[in-house]
Image (tube, rainbow, N blue to C red; front, side, top):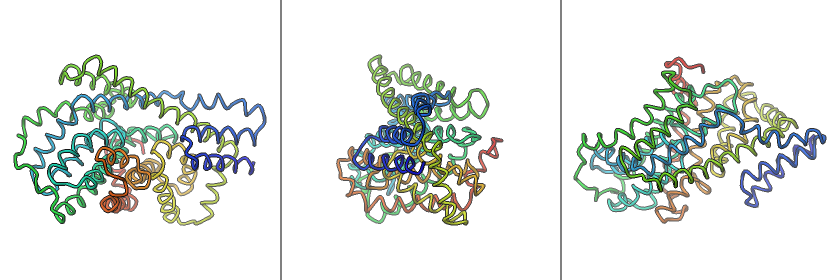
Length: 432
């Protein structure tokens, strides 16, 4: 069994080092470990367990929310939200940077994906910010950090995966628990952004003309109503989280095709095809990660690793800080869904051992992974915004580190005061 455990982790690590796609690395490592450590009857279960990993009704929400985000991105909602945010913020030092953060927070309530959020907002905001006197590197950094809040703001795809992998966690409670930390993360981006803008005189060329509030609000209402419909429907019991995803898709197409009328049949087809491609990638990762998790659990690899961590220290805070450090490094390399799939079989027993609240722990993981999404060297959000801004990632480091430190401080607040995450689901009567 020990040899099989080494094969599981060794093959996975080796494949990642040579650049193998994460899904392939997970599947091959799981299959190799099972073949080495178990009998032929168990090996025959590889196909069954790979399929069983995605044969779960709640997972239907993932492709539907991916489709929702893409519909809203391409229906012109983002541009109208930018105009409304400009009407709220007005021309001021750091004003456009604040607008970018606010729009990312709202878009996160539609897409549930940081990279999708970053792409939609960066495409619109970076040209405007450059024209107003913001450096490309600064603009790319701010939008990458702001878009990372999508992993916290419901409906978060990563939180959906967490609720499926951790028995007993209510997805509605998890969504509610992520809302306040998501807003704190947004504030953590805004504060250093305003400070740096004033210190370096960014935004000096921002236009003094402020969009009219009421017309911009009327134009933005269809987009602003999307999170209200999704979360309000779940709160009222009108529909489940999975059904909410279906409602969100229907609402998105209604807005794009009939209200804004800027999506024709060709646009609808393109959105369906692109979202299907992204969803397939996510679900293949989930499927093969299920094989990896089943192999690790069957072979006892995760139990041995958990016991080693628990033996390291009996102080729950020391263990939590150690876990947060490991997750931060993982977030710099992998996407949030993959991190949940790989680490949860190991981390859930540790959480049970220290009696941590699993809803709170899921939010901590999400916030930590959010920081990793814009922390070099391999930051998925920053890769997207840097490409759109046409700057190398290393050029963003002087600005991005301010935002990493600020969001790290927000994470420490959630660790120190769990009620910041838990009071809302408790107030709404959800089981935490």
